[in-house]
Length: 118
Image (cartoon, rainbow, N blue to C red; front, side, top):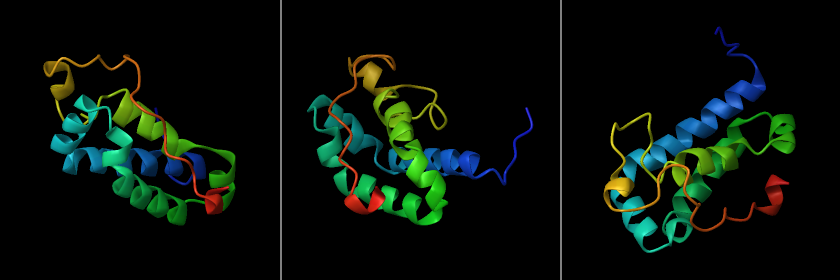
């Protein structure tokens, strides 16, 4: 399938996935430990806030107002993937640690969006 790199929605989705993938890549050990302690969003609060800020700064405001691509990426990659991105690793460290698989229940809730994001 050919993709349109100029499409603002596709760009927003891609940027959201890249940001969350990078968070996972650089914080795998912390993520696995946070999942064990049911504190994923507390442990990654700063990283997620920085990622969201970068995302919001670099996405078309109209797309930002209409969508929740960043939150979707967090759920799809970080929560459902249990913190070990399929794109970066062939194994799932959290599954080896005895946690639910990729379709298991999410731990915690997404952090609230800042008023400026609305």
